[in-house]
Length: 126
Image 1 (cartoon, one colour):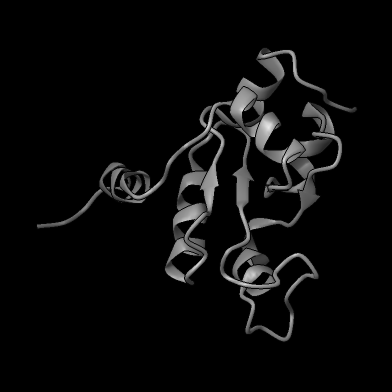
Image 2 (image 1 turned 180 degrees about the vertical axis):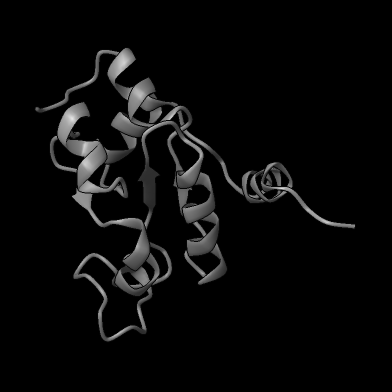
């Protein structure tokens, strides 16, 4: 039986405790790391979340694996609370699941992505 992207997405989300934009805002205030994985071409017209760490999707795992030589300073261990943000909340689910596969058990994403963040009236920049 072949799988569809809908199947893959459902599997990815089954292991995530997805957050609303408001929950994300509160979690970041408490020390969570918000990571925007959108490419520059998406961020430019839409805007950004102030303080979000920009890590494009194609290098995410290397930047957050605590054992990687290419890790970011925030990737101190597998207990880092990483919240992934994309434009609409689809790619972020797959990315968060990939981080969980690396052992970052607190990794999750923002339901609805940047669009939901902006609709909630939370801070953005242009």
